[in-house]
Length: 264
Image (cartoon, rainbow, N blue to C red; front, side):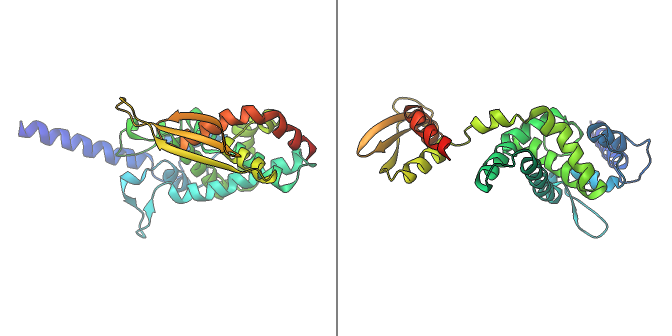
């Protein structure tokens, strides 16, 4: 029994060392990481150590020779900024009549977290992630985080223009429809509150626990407008309840809201 356990541990250790070797930063074109990055981005990578970081989770607790942590988090930070710049430049050229506020809103619709998660998941980035955490335990944001890290690494490795081409090819060209995005509502609460304030309307949100006989906790939200309840909704947390009641109220006032928006 002890011998079997030792053999199993030895095999696990050998496998770990082999994976690290295969994912090392040596620029041999036969290495799997080179093919993986080129296959995803269409760009031959120069510095594989960057992309080793992209596909290394914090749970690996790896460090380089200088004691710096090897994982995707710093590249994710950079990629977020680069991605915002690429999308901003695209919108600036495509929408010459839009003002700063409109461009900012449109950009937020494109780089929203759930959308980036879809892009990262579609690229299959998580399949190449070295981690000590089972995939089933990841939250959905890991896909978007990896995509941003890949953008950050691509920017350092190949420059802004090549990185921009990659973002256009995998995100903007196949998925961005400016007409549909214009009509997409990110937050019904924000939209309503903005409309209420511009029209100097008195409003108030009330959220109370509303469990009843149910085991799952529920919250009931009420939206008051000029001392009248205009909508109610229930959800499993306060934020969802407020957004849900805002959406219901929005459909009551959408014609007035859109008529004012069109004037601007």
